[in-house]
Length: 258
Image (cartoon, rainbow, N blue to C red):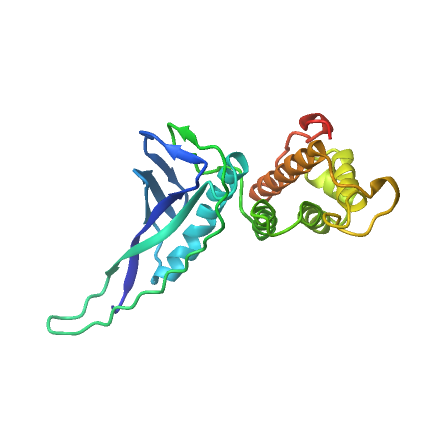
């Protein structure tokens, strides 16, 4: 092709074991560079800007899709939905004269898969909407990747949670700065730091402990840590979408007592 132009990208919706969609109506969404339509398990992304290659078009579109995947997974569980690339429609805006030859190339598709989680299957009558105020920034992607690893049994709870806490503190410049920047009650961050650093046994502890902290986490503590980590990831994505916004304060009262 002498002047290739990507017109449409096609994706297949992959659904995790915890979800089904029954007679879900189509979802449509539009941003500056593209418009998309999800219907019958197929996502059609129509490009409005010019992209000469499949790879360039996917680099524009797939951060939005990743935000959609993670925002849904925070609510429904890891790997709830995933958009798997299928093909691109490409036209030539400057075709050769009759009798000429063209060479057509396509970037190889890169697919990312994560482990499945066995949970109760829930039926939904509508697809999740693309998030308007959530962005899967590199920090959000890293934090969610650690949480997925924990849920899949690849990492202990304390090290995963500490990594997420460390990341938002690093971005903000400290724990109190993180509490202020992300509108989180300091006691939430302090409580998370204590449970993942000072409590645990030789098998699950993030570091060696002694005294009353040398014990396994209780089921209530595990549930609390999981809930806080998911809330931190969600708030990090909200902040990435709009750092100037005023977000409701996340408090200790938002979570079950550990």
